[in-house]
Length: 285
Ligand code: PMP
Image (cartoon, rainbow, N blue to C red; front, side, top):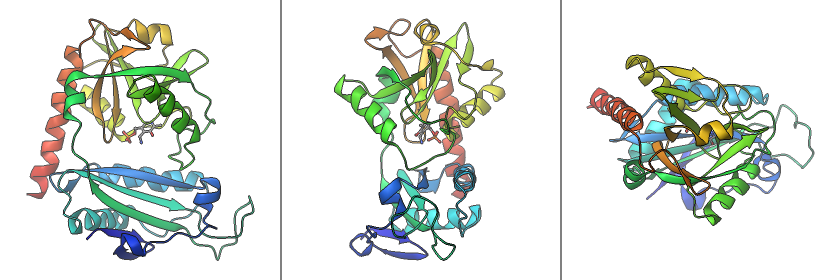
């Protein structure tokens, strides 16, 4: 039995149907979140649902639930589906209405759906690292919104996968912005570099956790732009996301990063990150 959520009801997958007139289907007119489950407990749920409400607000789509209510929905999905290590997916579209570009009338309510699935931690990649490919950042200028409109990200990831890489790294005007579904960090002379949280990137929740870990460990951080050439010259490079955590990047466009092995600062941050997961589990035990 797998329980899904649709507009206030918990139901079986086969019973969840979506209208052809859903604006998510026509326009990608909606927003989403992915929340990790460790040891049966949600990780950084408040941060995720705060961002969810903020994304919805930025596209002028009022949502009917608070952060606390969304957290309860996600908890129930994780719990009732018996998820130990996995994630909860929640999305909201502007609802169902005949296809016209401008917003439908106020009678049209958002379509909110969600589910929870098992998804083990990518332990092999966390240990050995991954290869990435750089691609042109052809996306729009509101990458701070976690929009369902992911066509440029989908195209980029496919290009990376076809080149035997795990992730695509976007380059806009020579500057490294972020991955197709991750944030990018570089380490040079013991200092961590990452693109500032502007409209050109999604301010990842994992990115924020890493920055907190750095503050806690007195590791220097520069939230400043850097070029592709500077990225190539970094001592260490890694990516972060909810499901990829802190994944070392060992090669960029076929050229190895540093000595081609995950670096020491990356490993240290992975260990600190791991301790924050432990804290979540302890809290609820
Ligand atoms: N950037 C983009 C474009 C993403 O899709 C994601 C994954 N949602 C991230 C960054 C990482 O965000 P988070 O750490 O919140 O998963």
